[in-house]
Length: 80
Image (cartoon, rainbow, N blue to C red; front, side, top):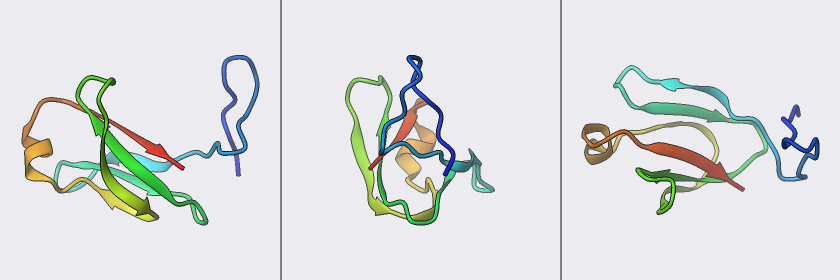
């Protein structure tokens, strides 16, 4: 599995690359998690406070929460 190193050139054993990151047909954020990887997906509007929106996620995930879709722009991250 390909990984992108940190700026100092190191790569964490937990590193992985998300696949097919984009906007789905419904207008929400979509992402495909690589085979064999399980993550928790988190959402934030300020990069300080994070809300877990999916635990133990695998495969393809699409944002469907109407409040987040209608709300201000936000950020997503996936954590092992």
